[in-house]
Amino acid sequence: MSSVTIRDIAKASGLSIGTVSRGLRNQGGLSDNTRQIVQDWAARLGYDLSQLRSHRIRRVGFLLHSQHNTLASSPFFSSVLHGAEEVCRREGLTLSFIVAGPTDRVIDQSREQQLDAYLCAGYFEPEILDSLRRTGKPMVLVDMHRHGISSINPDHQHGSFQATSHLLRSGRRQIAVIAGSPAHYSLQQRAQGYRRALFDAGIQADPDLEVVASHLGDGDAGVAAAMRRLLSLRKRPDAVVCFNDNAALVAMQHCLGEGLRVPQDIAIVGFDDISGASSAHPPLSTVRVNKEALGAQGLELLLRSPQADTPQERVMPVELIVRDSSSLD
Image 1 (cartoon, helix red, strand yellow):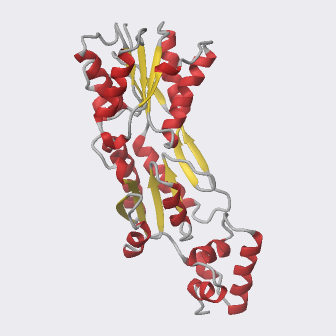
Image 2 (cartoon, rainbow, N blue to C red; image 1 turned 90 degrees about the horizontal axis):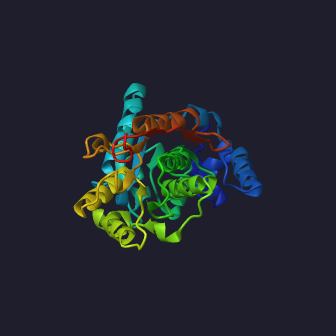
Image 3 (cartoon, rainbow, N blue to C red; image 1 turned 30 degrees about the vertical axis):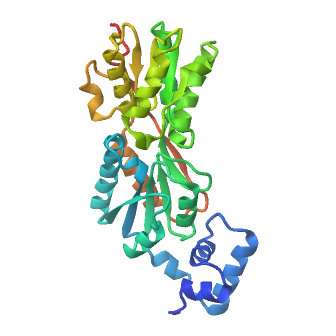
């Protein structure tokens, strides 16, 4: 058997190890010329292609951005993590949890832990994703989307569409949205679903009713400020769609603190169906995401197609859960 390694080919060709790995596996992201250079050097040095087939994933890195590692985000992403852990236990894999920020050396951490693949949950800067991609190791995005990388997402847009349509059917017409940063794929899609529901109902979107809460790391303060701004409008909203349940719970408490009745004066709907949604007072209407299944299916996608030529993009169905915060029945 040949003792030539991917590192040997990288050194001889002047290319990175990640580029050589992708070229040998015929993965995307390379020009035909670069792919041909990799294959020519592999043939010249006598690289044994069966080494690629013998490699299997044993250690997976579950990567979470530091801005998601907060009390507000933890009910969602901890459930996603639990779903991935279940699959790892079943398959006999090791799962390493890594919190990464834009200034952290993610590649160094992954090298130290000898990771074979990455499951990236939530938002990451393009620079971090690019650095992970260059390693040539399998990667799947969960609750995030980027062209050229396999991903799995809840149906964010349809869920928000359902929530807004529910409010319209109940007779609400001054429907506001507390949105998050459009840099986050999930939040961008949820805002689009809100606008699509208004459009289909023949209602013109009012820019004053669309408020972006400040950075997620600011906690509840940004959501409370967004709610204050909406309540200060000359024509107050009669309903609010929030970008997630934590934001909805903060908005609801602010309204109750201002003496408003929920849902009589203002209806509120969240997204995700975290554990605190059903136990809130009043119980929070929301869009249910099967968070454990999201993590489990993301991990299964990583295992089933680690060397797929064409990235796979999966969308999971969601379900509108109507509770007392938006229903007068």
